[in-house]
Image (cartoon, rainbow, N blue to C red; front, side, top):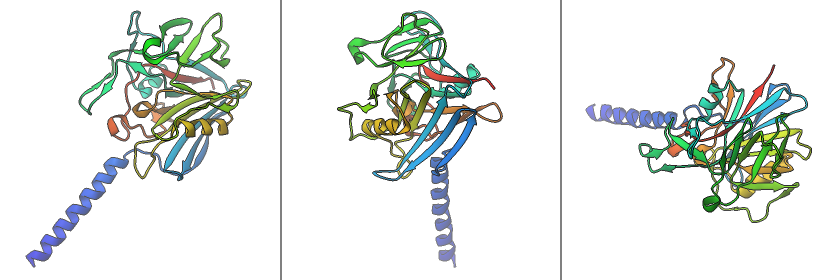
Length: 292
């Protein structure tokens, strides 16, 4: 009789640990189910599920500048000097500036991630974007050409018109990225097609009417393994992007909206330090105001 109780006890314990482990691993992640949702007039969110060549969950927000009341914001500097920003998560950025939509921005420095306890930056630590950056007419980062080369840049005028890589006379907003994905409707040559990772990208259609914000979850086996740069570029072109660039990816990739209760709602599954649902504090972001 004691032997039977032992078997039952250990069986229940193992089942409990498995269920508990899965619950912890799966906490807060969006269900891998395709969906389409109108967030605001002219603003649509879609979740795309792919199973080949690997599991992939794609989050797309399409903003129609003509039929929406969208205005944009790049993270403004907190101070002058070599490290003008204080690191914060994308959710904090959305909340701090009363935005309705936000994604992470450019890569940044200093940065390291050796373990869940040994990483930089933490919230509030000073950082600087790697590429050319401006907010509300103030240029606060000119790019580390020696370290990363010349990054591609998205410019947005004071009238909310977007364009890539042609610097206007008066810079209002500017955010740079890792690399171009699509230029003049064609996928860039030489993009890596071997390394899937979490990705963030931004693109526009040919006349600048539509802006595409894309985040792909990754590093989460059996849920979403991520995309290569080539796959990301092909996806952006399929959405309608005439120009598109990759922003910072990996543990930085995050898409957030304002929830019905006014609090930030994360649409994807961030994976900072390989912990599902954990947001990484980053330097700058791309944000959207919607005037209703």
